[in-house]
Amino acid sequence: MNKYLFFLGIHPELSTAEIRAVFSADSIKYNIDKLTKKYLFISTTNKLNEVSLISRLGGTIKIAKLIDEKNNTLSLVDFLMNAQPEGKIQFSITGAGNKEPLAVKQALKNKGRSVRYVEIKNTASILHNNLIKKRGDITIIDNKAYITVAIQPIYEMSKRDFDRPGVDSFSGMLPPKLARMMINLSDAPFGSTILDAFCGSGTVLTEALAIGYHNIYGSDISKKAIEDSEANIEWYINEKNLTKIKYKLFLSDSANLADIIEKNSIQSIISEPFMGKPLHGNEHEKNLQKQAKELAQLYINSFTAFHKILRYDGTIIFIIPSFKSGNKWIKIDCIDEIKKIGFNIEPLSENSPYLRYMREDQHLARDIWKFTKNNQ
Ligand SMILES: C[S@@+](CC[C@H](N)C(=O)[O-])C[C@H]1O[C@@H](n2cnc3c(N)ncnc32)[C@H](O)[C@@H]1O
Image (cartoon, helix red, strand yellow):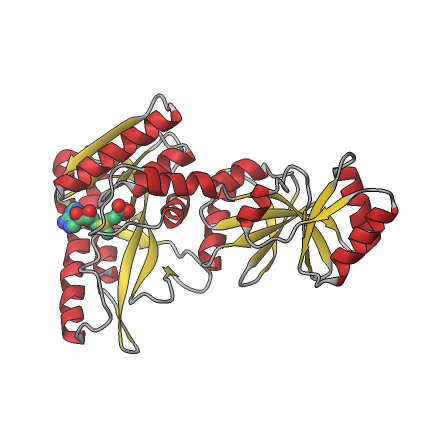
């Protein structure tokens, strides 16, 4: 049995739903041993391909593997001597206070090895000190020792984020990690056609390319958004020398998509839609209620078109925002109508039909929903 520790991002339930979806897509047999606010403990019969997994997941920061069920200094010393048989041993230990690192350091010195203890401040310092390749980054939890085997490619992700040419500072950008989680939650096979019906500057589309999708459609009502998406997709294709990419962009109101996209042709629609004017937190409840009503209509009109262009086994991952007014949440009332159009809700967690993504200082929450087509 292989035992893994996944370090989850700031939305652990969402990260876990994403891991479940990717494991199911890759037919990986696994058992969830424990889930906490920060960590997911998993057992698998087969070894995971940790590096390809981490470069696909948006919501996992680090993957570590169990090396020692009962942590003790001697076994850590043995492990590090085997992992780094020559030269100076570089290592870090998190989660065990000060004593354990000092004891390991001293024991290694007693064995005649020169040692450097690395203070880990963040994942960047693990990368900077090359501790993955050296197998030197150790985490102790519940008195068990884990070695980091893969880390999220943060430099590559921020390059996509900052270097891309088309930027939309008004509509705002979907966080790329969330875009990635949404794509993974869609269950769409890599060869299938996926669509973002509110593509903005193309975050979902470029993250889909980065994961391995090659048939991507985007549409938006704004000409500037389509131009930005095109510039960003072209930039990414050139940057990575990608071949065999088929993409199409449509300037269209999402409600009219059935007029331009073939019926039953899209495997998944993955969208963060228009969510109203940016909020400052001092809006009157009445105005927010009015906005919620308008958005409900926009989403209902969109889903009517989605039902026509989606394949019979298609899925939709869609953000429905909620607005904070004082201590109250204002919701967009559209779920019943969406069901009536012909969709089922696929709950993303055991506790709730949707999962919420929200930064602490924000007045808007993004509620992520998954729908499947009801073909009756
Ligand atoms: C929140 S942004 C999407 C941002 C995008 N996910 C990104 O990261 O770049 C919403 C987008 O919806 C578009 N939009 C607004 N109303 C629309 C409609 N009726 N049909 C299609 N697109 C619409 C806006 O032009 C905007 O680009």
